[in-house]
Length: 260
Length: 297
Picture 1 (tube, rainbow over the protein chains, first blue to last red):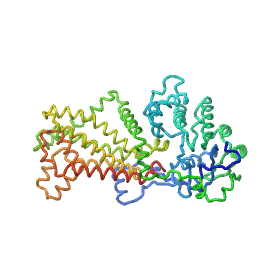
Picture 2 (cartoon, helix red, strand yellow):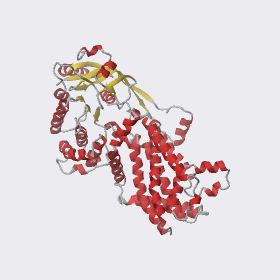
Picture 3 (cartoon, one colour):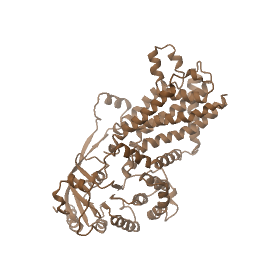
Picture 4 (cartoon, rainbow over the protein chains, first blue to last red):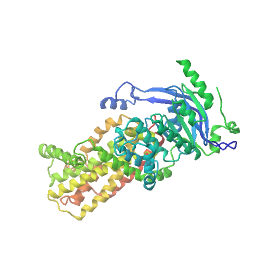
């Protein structure tokens, strides 16, 4: 997919990235107003802050036209890494450089659940910086691509009435309506049905051909195999392996089998 | 361990490599002018978001949008019952119902803008984490929601004022500049509080108390002049500099013929302009300074 043999242009550079989560209110509730006041007056930190060191010094370079799979067991830091590449999480140390503004598609990235699918499409497109004319032009394509109107007029119902698969499909369709320099997909496709997965794999290919870079987090090894030629394997916040998908997946599958 | 590298570029440090290909640190805050340009580009989003949110507010209630008008009416009725009939704070105010309702509605605008601004980041983490847009869109959109609610209230207020015997005068046109100044002031305050609320989650719990204190000193239920007449001059000056009081008084002056311009503090237009400029621009700058930190952690 890269411009065969010629110069490869990096789009994402991660250099010794560490990410630490600070979690407020673990255990204790939000507290009453008086306890909040006394805490602020005494300038004491909230009693329940705990830290989680989720990513411990990872480095990689991704290039234009590349699709990179991220694999690893639950809690290995895959989603955290993507969120940091998207600029949504601060790095505790190290730095991440990107080409343009990466867009993250997560499975739990809720849109506005009390609003209709239609409103979500319009608002999502406007938030991505499209004009009303562009939204009008793309609207039907987005709804058709998501396929949520296949069984009745679902797009005029609030998003909270959607199944998780339908919501994920609509979200992906909104985000994929724009060409991205760097697109980060976090499990967002796993809930869609096979027909939708085929459509979205096709769309990912198109996005890569328009010279973008795609990152894909998935627990479905087949979808990694189908979309990515390179795979990074994370385990406990460090890179365990980084290389051609077939090799890495073979190692990974063996590792998971042994762990059982 | 398998390593996978591209070309001779590996010899360069990652910072040098990033610079060579024009990559930027992910999630870095853009300069103020560029930020303002992007914010302007999202103006349709702000308005569409506010309208969608406002119509969604009452969808769960059976009476639906009727509550847009009912809520301000009930508010005014409660305050009239307590402050007008039970406590009798209407001393020396000719048209107390109109006086009270104007104060309640105008202050409510500032109050709800600030309260929803404080929560605007924390309540919309899903949106913030899903899409990239200048975060100042959120507190501004919540101010726009409150402005739209106020327009409903103003309709109700107009009827109340005419029914209580005030004439319709040309002074009503002053509503427009007053609302504009107050909206800028409120947006600034909402952005200011949004940054604080995003950092200090305890703020959302404290704000209602602070806002109530502010309300009682802003001449919503009684005329501050009955108090300042006997107080030392500096106390009167401090009380009269209160922006909420200024907007209340200006709106009363615009709507009610029985309120004369002599009852207004001196330089009232100048001070309201100063308040909205300082708070509006200051709040925007303060919010922008932490742009890259919203929605993280």
